[in-house]
Amino acid sequence: MKVTRKYPIVVVQEKKEYWTYIPDIPGIYGRGKSAKKGKHDIRDAASLYVEDCLADGNEIPSSLVLGR
Image 1 (cartoon, rainbow, N blue to C red):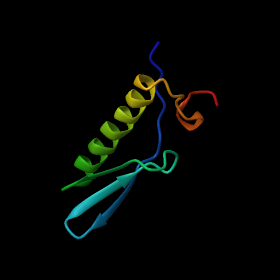
Image 2 (image 1 turned 120 degrees about the vertical axis):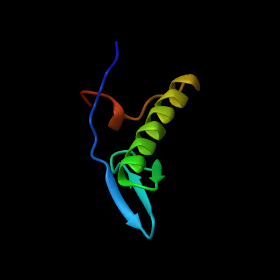
Image 3 (image 1 turned 90 degrees about the vertical axis):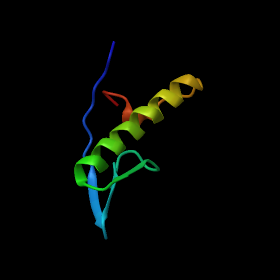
């Protein structure tokens, strides 16, 4: 079963780059030449983080699990 949960993405512009992060998931960041690319990068980073947790046999942090 696939579980989907939405998180707010914060976009910060620094000079000519856009940095993104998700306040509910500390330690994961994205960046891009546009806000759209930064948002895409942070989504990829969050997906990879969950995949790594599952592959390593680690629990997914409760902030990422639906219903907690």
